[in-house]
Image (tube, rainbow, N blue to C red; front, side, top):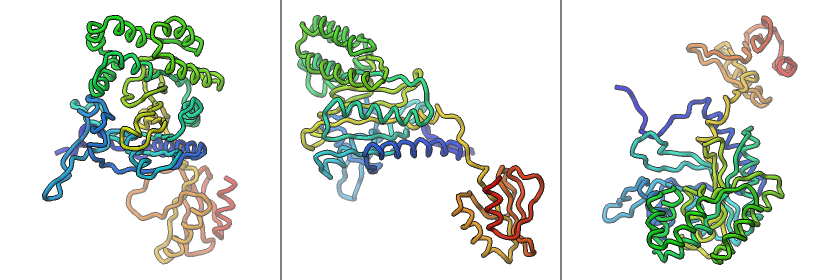
Length: 407
């Protein structure tokens, strides 16, 4: 019987883990330099964190892994976290500060009936609490693009949308919060039937929503033209349009090229302001935006907040094979009676920056590094491999290190 993985999961081989760690290391270092501090939240969270205030759409809630955490007499329903941001919001509320910059690397779990899509997904993200300006929005974009640039990814497309524009028009339909959340999900998924139903109920407002979702452009000037033509009929859009224009203008001043696509905000359930996505072709590498209502919805104070996530699985697919630095690897063969000295030699080699291991016997592993033999007779060491022609006899470990440093 073959040993199979669970559907929608994957093993990460050493070569893939090298990519994973590279992404993780670059992200952590970049986030640290922007002032973010790392947190880690539990894999299990209470279900009500995601349901009691409508933080996730009905479509998302149908994809959570949920079960009863039974304690013998009673229990509460828990989930494998389906989202990275909401647990960090919970952490922030439990550890209050006027302003906090937090980052994380985590896995999330979402059910897929087919098993063809990933059910466990990895992401790295940042959350910025207490800052509600276009500067904060631009900082998140700059941070994400810095990570992607350090990973060597070129031709990344930045797409921008604004949830506030859509929510302002949806408010005109006088829907319940639950219904509005569901409709928001449907229209962002380009559900024509949902849009048609809204248009039948309120034709003028429905057509306006359709025009908004079709909005595409490439500059703050384009948005200004849209405001001059459209804003007079819908004054409620003035505030979110002004916010959008200010953020896009700043990003342009910073030298970033963006595409404005209002319908590109799919998958951003709880966002209230500017939303952004990073794409390589049709592959989504990450996204985020402003969610000024989420902290208070979860039970915290009313304050602005924003965040982003980069999708590690997608990023790994974009990277070439990682170098394993085999040119700095040393395999030490040592006589049985000198094993204690052999382990001491290994420590010295590792301290000098080499990957060093002792020959434990068994089948030889193909390698490109050096072979170092530790003998019982003078000279004590014999060095070979790693580009050397033949074998080189050396009397001391210091001589070995000097020679390795010159090769």
